[in-house]
Length: 392
Image (cartoon, rainbow, N blue to C red):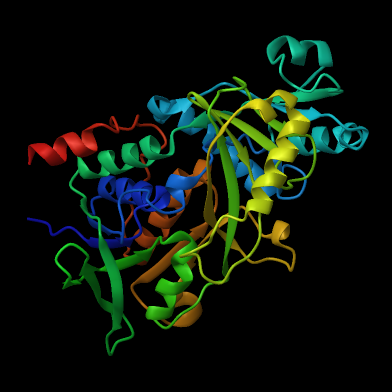
């Protein structure tokens, strides 16, 4: 009987769950650990936009192309999680209207479908939009339920043999004499007992905490935790995702999330992603910006404000210059550490391809030739993750 190669994934967010699914399909025996529940970190706190790439088509075209490609795939394999309600990039100010040609050229270059709409058409679709709107581009965006998306990948992995260990926090990474990671110690937060885990390959998919995990193994990655505040309102104010026609900025998007509306977001850097209090001034700024898009939202009660830290890759000094693309780090190639890989950066929209490229690297390192299958197969129902767990 052929022995399966083993993989240990640290982090049960979108990327870790998608990677677990990909690797099980490629014949790996997979264990996933997380200090919390599935998607209890950044992934569970995203605003849930299925990006078209339009937001990044001018200043980050690589991320834009990744988004539109994965947008199409996720609409096919994760229909259970997605409301494909389209989006509009709105020109409300003259300076935003002046951005029209740059946006159009960027969208064409990145193969993002974008159709110009006049104010009358926009207001016929979304009458609560600021009546001063000057026009906008319709793009193929939507919204998704973050927990359902994460659980759909996790269920698809678990139903194929992956083992998930929530509430198991990584405490130590041991490097053997050959320079290979040969053991990871995790703390079972229920029993407060340590557990030692071994695998042929360990993958750091800890997102904004990737740097902390790397430090336990004596390596580093240029990842910057970049929090953003989001504000949820008690009423669904639009059916389309509404964004400002401009370069990415603070408070420039309103997302319909089932019966609510979510506005976001800010972007700044922190050293520690564990505790980031919500700044009331940022909440006020988000609301003020949202009112510019949709004046009626000022009369709606705020249900909650919350924060999450994105794992962005350092490329410049300005926080908005941090790339929204992703990178897979082979620590053997650049830092001499064998059996250890980090995947970080990216967007929720690109989690599947992040997993694919990471699995490709792992298979290459282990001299395996097994193609990716996740772009064609529909994900299992997210409900089966806990249903199957209860049945066992």
